Image 1 (cartoon, helix red, strand yellow):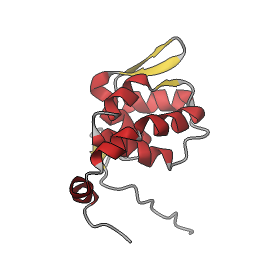
Image 2 (cartoon, rainbow, N blue to C red):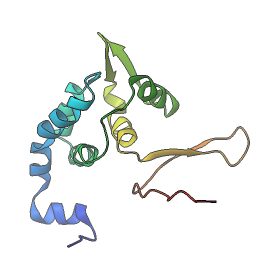
Image 3 (cartoon, rainbow, N blue to C red):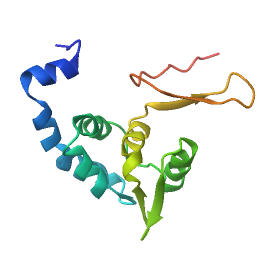
Image 4 (tube, rainbow, N blue to C red):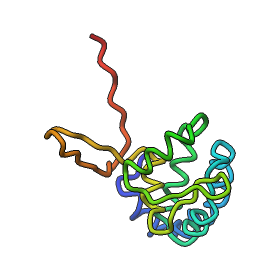
Length: 134
């Protein structure tokens, strides 16, 4: 079964609160693969904001094992996600939590069709494009 408008369904079914309650469990699962990220502020935020909690659930279902700390830091810089390293852990600025979650959920991307004019976008979904075999 597929739901055409999941946010509306959540509202009607009063699932928003349950999604937020699941945030600590999802953070725990994700942080096993990313011990170099401090998820404490992200978890606190997600327990009160269902969009963030939904993003965490989505990230949990994605490939997090093998994410390179240096590449993640570079991606944060590239997409202007404010984060710094404190005691060996990446700490995301409170104002950048959703951007960080979008990055981890593979929803941020950039194209540069005009020279020296990169454009950043937020994808509505993360459908992969199949590689062409030529």
